[in-house]
Length: 353
Ligand code: OGA
Ligand code: NI
Image 1 (tube, rainbow, N blue to C red):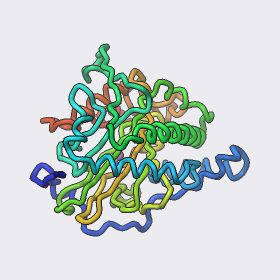
Image 2: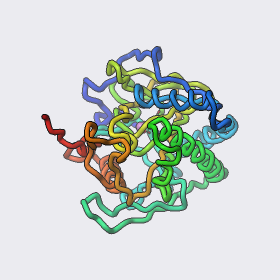
Image 3: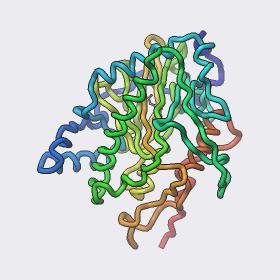
C-alpha cells in the first residue's frame, strides 16, 4: 500500500502547479573543474560565476564536481530498493516525535500534506538538538540514525556518499565565501560539529498532480543544500527576476545547489534563500536526495560583521540555529494552528529616515 489521496494533500488554489512549467531560462549550470587548479584565471572566473548565481538565482547546477557517477548510481539504487519495501518493513525505522530521524510518510509543509515519503539520517553518529523551541532552552536531546536491514548495503553506501558530499560541500562553502569578498575559510569554522543531514525523498505517481505537491513551496532553513535528482524532473524554483516558477532540467551526474536561510542572514541578504517546491506527475515515481550542511545546534546566526556597515546595517536579529530547526521539525510533524517559523520573522524593522 502506498499513499492514498485525500483532502489533506490539496493545495490552496493559488499554490497549485500549472499544467505546464517551462524548463527554459532556468538556473545556471556551473562547471566546477577549475577547483582542481585552485587559483588562476579559470578559478577566479568560477568564483565570479558562483557569486552571480547566488545573487541572481539562489540556485545553480554543478557538473564536474568530482563525485563519481557510480556513487550516484549506488545511492539511487539503494533509495529505490528501500522505498520499494513493504510499509511494515519501512515502519520499523520510522521517525517519531522522540526521534526525528528515519522513515516518515506524513510530512506537512506550511500545514498541507506533501505527496512523498522520506528517510532522514545525519552524517555523524548522532545529533544533538534543543529539547524545545522555547527561547533560552538549555536542555538538549540526542538522536541516533536508524538504519534499515534492507537493502543490506544501505548503510555502507550512504556512509561512503556522506563523506564525498561533505567534501564537495566544504569546497562550495569556500567558493561562496570568496565570492562574498571574504577569505576562503571564513565560513568553514561554523561547520565544525555541524548538524549535517541527508534526506531520501520518494515521490510516488500521484493521481491528482494538479491539486497536490510533492513538497510545498518552502525555503531551506540550513546553510547550503546539495541535491541529487533522478531523470524524472519536478523541482520548481521561483525565478527571482519575475517570480515565475521554472522547472530544473535534470542533467545526469550533476547536483543542484541552493543557498539556505543561514547564508541569506550571514550575507545580510546579498544571497537570498529562494523558494522552491516539487511538482508530481501521475506516471513516473521520482527520487531525490538532498544533503543539508548546517552549523552545530548551539550556533547563533547573524549577519557577518564584514558584510555590514553604517550604510548597510544588519537586517536580522541574531537567532539560535538549533531552536529554529526544532520549530521547523515540529511543524513538519503535524499541522499546527499557527504560521510556521520563517526567516523573515527575524528581520529587523528597518528605520525609515
Ligand atoms: C527538500 C526539497 C526538492 C526535490 O527536500 O527540501 O526541496 O527535488 N527537495 O526533491
Ligand atoms: Ni528544499
